Amino acid sequence: MQHRRILYDDAKLPLSTTVVDLVTSINGQRAQGMTSFDALEAIQGDSETVLMEIRPASGGSSREVQLR
Image (tube, rainbow, N blue to C red; front, side, top):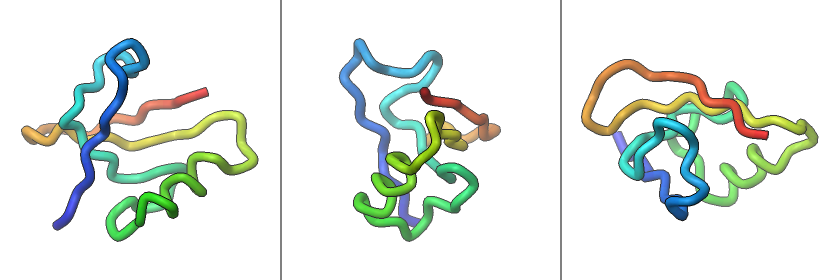
């Protein structure tokens, strides 16, 4: 399974998210197989908020993060 890392400027890092967490879905759409352009389209949609499901790369439970 191929995953992409979340890379943020430290000042903009969402609370309790690390640079090795994996995005598994964006607004309910499965992220596996998405290109970076697909992900941008999902994030830049008409909604004022973006809901991402994130799983730690080290394992463990996924959690939902809402971005505004």
